Length: 368
Ligand code: MRU
Image (tube, rainbow, N blue to C red; front, top):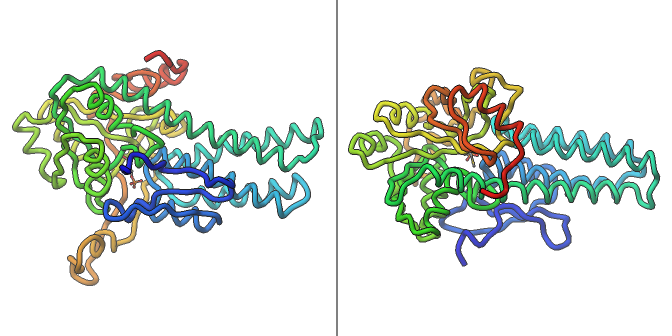
């Protein structure tokens, strides 16, 4: 069984626990863990056991559904239910600040929850709390299914920008492990592979948590692709040699003007790509576009513990005790460095302020 046969996020049969691949153990061990409590779900998101913006959104949807089911067993009124539901939703929302999919999914679930409460108040049903919980399940499952469809569409649009035999660079993991299937930045690569494009994929190791080495290299290799792992500081020389025809990266939050946050190091790649005339594409599901954030300066960047830089992933500590560390999880790439934004609704080009809002107002073209 390949890593690609596992679901990144799923429910167990009795729908009282969420099952995820513990991504901190990959590629050495594939362990499926079950999460039942708010604390377990919060920890799994914070510790990056489940990670990548779309997968975090799916985990938030299923996570709050599981918690709602438990709350429904413990209270007797819709008012008590909603008070506790909101408390737990706020708690999950505090796990990571940058990927907008977390708050996006919880807001969407909250809307459905409030609508269902209105409904049972207006036209009473047999078991009101069960009715509400069932609606929450439907919504969480819809978020997951939409993520699969979205990634496929992004793959088709992305592939239209690729030629057979191209060398493509990606940073971090915006692959299947960061979504429900296909990934975002990797979706054109998976489709190109299926269609015999003979692509050469280069993947940055992505310090400090090595999502590129541990996850992207692993999943693309499992799919039988030609993938080469690079130290983070090598892509410039490959671009200079002409070996990279395009860069595809994912996104944690895109502002209305096209500035976007993604894994730390993305800005370096974008800057170098501009220098060497290599097209730089950002693959962004609509769920990662935050029109309430005008530009990149308004994106909150998550700060992570020092030990991720000084101690993790090596047998021995590799930095002096007590050294000052600056460890933001993401950086913001200016829209001027972006060649195009690839969404499930189509491809946006500069001026992004206009093209992004135009795309968002369009329905998804399922025929792509
Ligand atoms: O800290 P992580 O591993 O959650 O960071 C993930 C990324 O930066 C991804 O590129 C982004 O979430 C897009 S995933 C399709």
